[in-house]
Amino acid sequence: MKKSVGVILIAGSLMAAVLSGCSSKPSAEELQQLEALKSEISSLESRISALESEKASLTRSIAEKTAMIDQCAKDKALVEQRLKSMQ
Amino acid sequence: MKLHNRIRMIVVLACAFAVTAVAQEMSKDEWQQQMQELTAKRDQLNSRLSALQTEVDNLKKQDADQLAALNKCEDEILSMVGATKESAQAFEAELGRIDAKLDELARLSNQDLWSRRSELDDVQTSISNAKKNKLSAIPKYYDRLENQQNRLNGLRRSIESSMANTYTVGTWSKDRDCLWNIAKKPTVYDNAFLWPKIWQGNRDQIKNPDVIHPGQKLNIPAKAELTADEKAATRGYWQRKQSGQTQMD
Image (cartoon, rainbow over all chains, first blue to last red; front, side, top):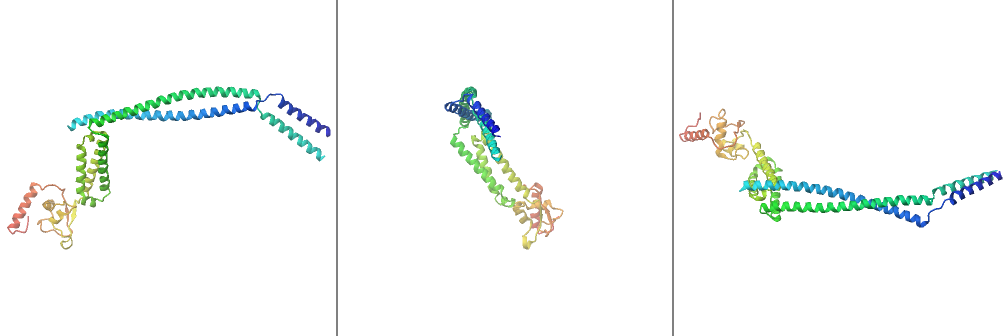
C-alpha cells in the first residue's frame, strides 16, 4: 500500500512539473498588453456601431429633405398658378 | 487502512488540480497568436472607422445643404405671396382661431347650433377674408381653408336637416299655435311671413288658414321665398278677409 501511494505521489509531481515547466509563459506585462488590445478593439467596435447608426439617421434625414424639396417645388408651381387666378 | 485511503484520495485530488491549473495557463505561443489576430482585427476596425467617419462627415454636409435648399424654397414661396415668416405665423394663428370656433360649434346640439347660427355666418366671413389673403395660395393653408369650409358647410347641413319637415299642431292655450306662429318658430322657418307656404303645402287639410286643429300633422315645405302661387293665395286671403268672407275655398 505504501508503495502505491509513493508511486502516485511521484507521478503527480512529475506531471505537474512537465506541464508547467516545459512550455514558456507570457510575462505579466505581455498579458497586460493583450488585455489593452482587447479593450481597444471593444472601444473601436462601439464607436463603429455609433457611427453606423448616425449614418443611418443622416441617410433618412437626407431622404426626407429631398422629398420635402420636391414637394416644395411642386407647391411653388401651384402657388404661382393660384396667384394668377387670384388676380 | 482508512488512513491509506485518505492519503490516496488527497493525492489524486492534488494531481487533478495541478493538471487543470496548468491547462488553464496561456503559453507564449498562444499569446503571440492572439496578439497577431487581435492586432490585425484592430487595424481592420481602425480603417473601417476612418472610412465611416468620412462617410458620416459627407452625409452631414449633404444634410446641411438639403436643409439650406429647403429653407430657400420656402422663403421663395413666402416672397411670391409677399409675406414674411411673421405674417405667415399671424395667418396661421387666424386659421387656428377659425378651427377652434368650428370645434366649439361642432360640439353643440342642433338646437343650440340653431340658436347660435349667426356665429356660422361670422365663421364664413373669417374664412372668406382668409381666402382673400395671398397666403391662402400656399397649399398647406389652401387645404386647411378648404377643410374649414367643408366643416362649416357640414354644420349648416346639420342645422337644415334638424329643421322640422312635419309639425304637429298644439293647442292655442298652451302652444299659441297658428300658421303665423308656427312659421315663426326657429325650427320651422324662423320667419312668420312664410306662413302661406305651410297653408299652400297643406291645402288638403287647411281650408281656412285661420283655422287649424290640435293634433293636425302639417307638412313643412322647404324654406324658400314665397312662390308666385303662394303670393297670389296670400293676396286672395287678405282680400277675402277685408270683404268679411271667412270661409276659404
